[in-house]
Length: 172
Image (cartoon, rainbow, N blue to C red):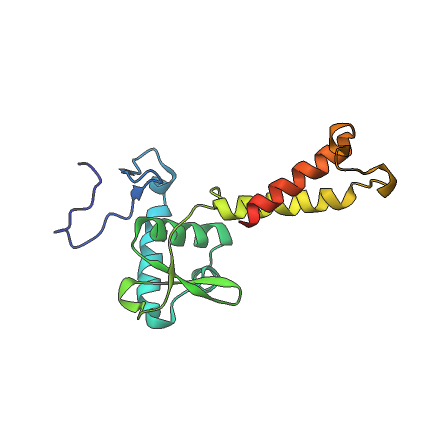
């Protein structure tokens, strides 16, 4: 298959991209990866990460040592991470993720590639819970208006009850 890395090849194809659904494909000539300079930058990033050894390399360190801006440096490292050519450690340095080659992991925890566009289910639940909690605190209902059936006649009580139920389910 065109673009797919052959296990017998000495060099991995850095433009063979795994997709979220478990399939994968080639970033062809019309992709951003084929733009002039980008392929060289990605290959250069792989060499820089390999040379960094056990210490690893952050996007900032790579950018500063190669005269790149954030997007160029982090884009190259992200492409390599997504393709499985390098790994991101759970540890960070200077607030940035540390990238290493497979032979430099040395048993440390790594983070699988996940696009910034894909929020995890836990992040979505957390964000919703935060918003609901904030909104619940803004709903003012005088105690004199409450009874066990107030939610059936007061829209604010019904909303507050729905928020409480949603938050209770999220905690389980």
